[in-house]
Structures are given as C-alpha cells and as structure tokens.
Figure (cartoon, rainbow, N blue to C red):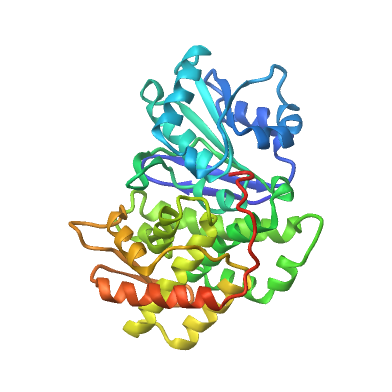
Length: 380
C-alpha cells in the first residue's frame, strides 16, 4: 500500500493509497489525532453517500454528523460555503471538530476552504472519491471557490491532516469521469515524469479496456505515480512562487473552456486536455518542443478520450484567459512543454499566439468524432 509524504514549510502529512481504506477510517483518524479530541463532520454529496455510506460508517461506533452539498461545479460558490458553515454552527461544531471531505475535487476544495475559515481554522482530512481528486486536487492545500468572473479566485492554502485515497471508490465512476481523471495523470507525465507518461502510453489498451470495474492494481500504480509528482512539486514550492506553476499545464485555456461553457458541457479533465493541446501548439510555434514530441503527446491525450466537443469561440476563450489567477501585472504566465517530462514557464505569450493556438485546438476538435453524451455530475 503506497504511503507518500508531502513535506512543506507549513505542513507535513501523508497520502495513503489502497483498496478498502474506508472500513479502517476511524482508527486512522484516531491515530492522526492521538493526543487531540475530535468530533467528525462528513461533508459529502447525496449521490456519494448513497453509494458508500455503509462502508464509510463501518468503523465508527457513533455515526458522525453528515453535511450534504449538491454535486457539480455550479455549487462551488461562497453561498454554499456559508450554508455549510451555518450547518456546522447549528450542529455545535467547535475548534475540536474535524471535517472529512468525502467527494471529488469540487467538494474537497470547498471543504478545505471551509476548514480554513470556520472559527478561523479547524482540522480536515481529504477522502477523495474521483480519480482526478485522488491524483491531484486533494493534495497540496489549494482550497477555494469560484466567482462569476473566474475559477478559484477566492481561496486559501490550507493543507489537510492526511489524504486517504481508497481505490475501491473508483469502481462506481462513469467511464467519462475516469478518463477525465486520467488526463491529469497524463499531465503529470508530460510536465515531470517521463516514466509515468511511457507507462500510460504502453499500457493504454489495458487501462482503457471495457471492464465491469477498473483494474485496482493498475489504477493504484497510476495514482501513486501521479501523487508522487504532485507531492514532490508541492514540497519544493508550496505556494506557487515558481516550480508549482508547472502543475497548471493546460489549465489556462482549460479553465477558460469551463467558464465559457458555464461548467455544463465538459468535465475538468477534458477541458485541461483540450487546453494542453492548445499549449502544445504555442510550444511548437515557438520551437521550444520538437514536433515529434508534440505529436506524441497529442496522440496520447486523444487516446485517452474521446474528448467531447464544446461551444466557444477562440476569441472568447482568449479573452477569458485574462482572468487567470496566474497572471501578474496583466502579463499571462504560461506553462510550455520542452520535451516529455520537461516544461518551462514563459511570461511573454502574446494574444495573437494564443489566438492561433486556440484556433488550432478548435479546428482539431471539429475533426474529432467524439460521441455526444449527456454531461454527468456524478461524484463531483
């Protein structure tokens, strides 16, 4: 069972990855808080609780309080945080309370932010239920909510006490959700870990083969490798002053796609995949990456599709990138790959460059034959 440390100047914790972690949850929480009393409050969504409440509660003698939040990015708002805080107060939560974020990336971000501001700070633990949350968003302490003006513009750095990634939870993910999460692992390979990239390249057929449930051993290996990338980067640059920015590869245009489509047409991992293709085009135009490497990366991104189409113009997407929180003094910071496993951060990407790359991405999207599907919020 992989146990991966995250060591930053402000917090040290571990990410535990394996099957059947839920039935051992309460003893693990007691070990974390050996000398501290705690009263657990679960923050989850109705659909996740309906699927997993029994194994979750198996290790608790007394059931914890449960707070519900509807699934979906549209609920990632300050109003939802206020509602959860009011529920905590009504239930008598105090500074000995421990929040358990039992959900996907949206719910984990919001629970971490709630923990940062309720009574000026209480403890919380991440129990991610989606592949994307297990490999990325539950680690590193980034928390927050969206504004109409842009994604994650309100938030704080607030690390969890621990992350428990139970790979059994991935068995109920819709195929599109799993593939969207795998795009974040491809990203980890592109920016930092060529070995992970090769593994996903060489084993794509086995990873994506139709099955009743995902192969736990294979998924555990990919989750662990992805978490090691995130943990290493975060440990070297906790608050995104430099290196950590590489984790945002594909996110500048990806976030713009999500905003332009009101978070209803496309999943986060899918948006990042399209954004990665756009960023690759900028890199090719600048000759910072060989064409053969860019083609190889694009091929793998598309292999883990199908990536669904979306409706937005290149002009609108480029305009939305001006709201990206990585921008400094009006200058866009952009992550560009230089080879598989290597990147650089540039701060002089022009609007015409970005427009050309986005137009290329949209043209490629129109060439693809992705099967239209209903947008699902399950396990967000």
